[in-house]
Image (cartoon, rainbow, N blue to C red):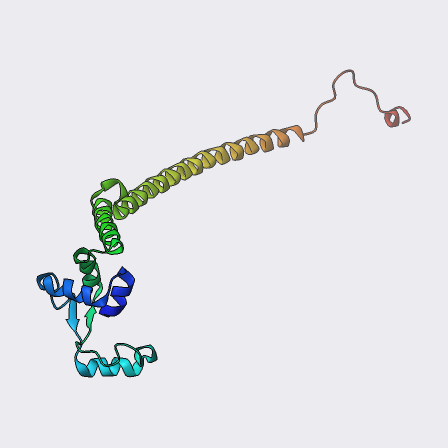
Length: 177
């Protein structure tokens, strides 16, 4: 982001922003901030019509461009209310992230490992129960087959002709002869 955009965002003037940066140059290494060259500025102005015309068309000093890290650092050197609020929120965010990473109860990788372990144990229990059911079913089927075989044997015995019970009745056909 460019210095004049950040000055507007933080509620200060560009000259105060630049002064704060110059007074704290040690806080802004090259990966945090750099000054645009005249060619870069001209190229940037050609690409964006909002930069053409008005104040800043021919700046005396080239603007600073800030990286994400520079924007964060800038909030610590500016003295506007918004910059102070942003800096406080950045510090709170860093503390929250650190606590999140160090807290063992909220470690997402550990949680996933625990869930996978629990699922494996559950699956092993289900398979053990399944095998027990299969063994029980196999035993029950063997008992059913054995009982059916016994019933079949009894039925064949029951189908044999039996001697009549009681007194024999003479056949009428035999009397007529």
